[in-house]
Amino acid sequence: EITSNSLSAPACVNDEVARNWLNNLEVRKAIHTAEESVVRRWELCTFQLEYDHDLGSMIPYHKNLTSKGYSALIFSGDHDMCVPFTGTEAWTRSLGYKIVDEWRPWLINDQVAGFIQGYANNLTFLTIKGAGHTVPEYKPEEALYFYKHFLDGTPI
Picture 1 (cartoon, rainbow, N blue to C red):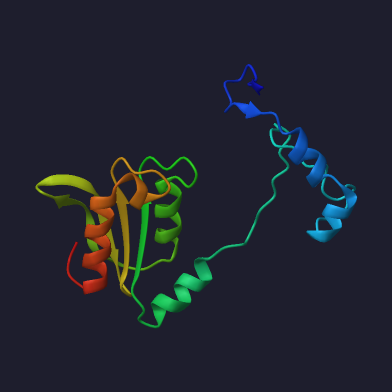
Picture 2: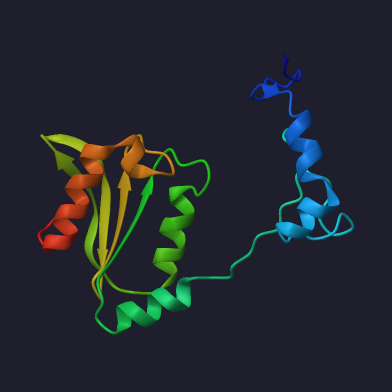
């Protein structure tokens, strides 16, 4: 049996066996799942998501490492709907480092592959045109190009 809801979500399958097993008290204990009062009953398909995930800012770590001379390449796909490149650009800028390489396109085979900006303390911010959150998956040629150049210490 395959069902889907009216919101065009991915199709759900009959999960009765998995649902019964994963909600079994003994199984929950064995896999160290919190009690139902903490973590509700397991469901394969649900639209009741309770998500609260905050690891805190990574900015102090970047500032600490780059101020010690470690090179950092911060990159974002310009089609990333999970972490928009504008947010990544903003926190990169918030480090307060002087711009040493102005915002400019970077090219592969004479085609614009994205944009790049260099900062003091060996910090580089780069975007990749047409890439989503997992850049190498969306744009493998571009990812290999900028990874290789960054690791080799050659200009992108």
